[in-house]
Image 1 (cartoon, rainbow, N blue to C red):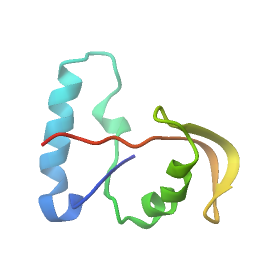
Image 2: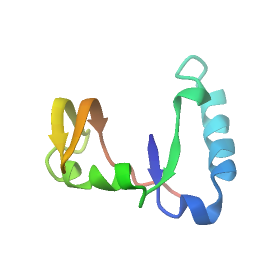
Image 3: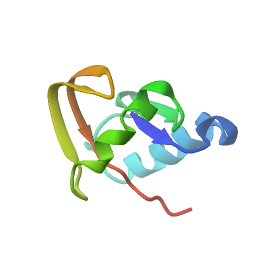
Image 4: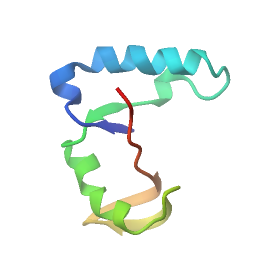
Length: 84
């Protein structure tokens, strides 16, 4: 899941096209069908925000735990600053 600020406002199709272009440059990385784009204010993505404050720059892995009242079997959470 990629939580992108203003994904709804800018249009998810545009974002999927950009992601597809990146994936085309790295064959075998993962299929586009494995990626879900949501707005950063999506309830699930928003609930993960507090988890970003505990890991390091690379991110943090969670297994069978609760984050902000939601149970996650497995999650790897990290934050990226994208250039536009």
